[in-house]
Length: 273
Image (cartoon, rainbow, N blue to C red):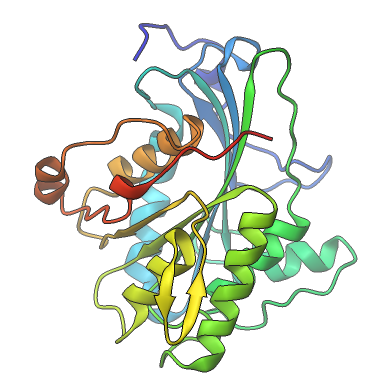
């Protein structure tokens, strides 16, 4: 990481939404560049979470870590400017996840495909299509987009994993690939049977349930609320900011942290947009 002094970003913190007049606490601006103009890359990334009861401890842990993670980045060989947004799927929860994908899409005059708090697949599809991706990179700067989908059940209406989940994950996977969006699947502790394989394939490709998925260039991780959540958020953002080409911690280090970034070793650079 280049040695820099945080100036402009240090006072950004949690700010108003991207749309003028839409105040919310879910958009956090940060990074490790001095300011946007000096950044090597600009990142728009959305963390979207299942807000059902089983996820309450994870929501609290991520909410506690979010601001520090976004504002105190130290990415290897890349200075980035980051706009990180935190959303529930159909419901809000806590101070950070205080808006949701379904309402966001409806507010844009569109009909969301997300209709359950556990619709991790449809939420990705909605965000790829309707989020305010803002490519304001100039000159040699690069621009990257990422979605982090977080859950512990099937991707369509929750557990159990069945044909509807494979279909929803496939639609999300295809959408992310078509629009050059890094998809990172984050499975929390105690997932239902089949969830880990499904989330992994949705992000980094493979065949599950007879359905084949492509590689979005993203990542898969399994991480509980008692693990180093702030470090996980930082690693995810740095990976996206580097276009999928950032070095990540050694497997041994990850094991000690309890992170389990199973997909990081297979990640590849996606072209910037």
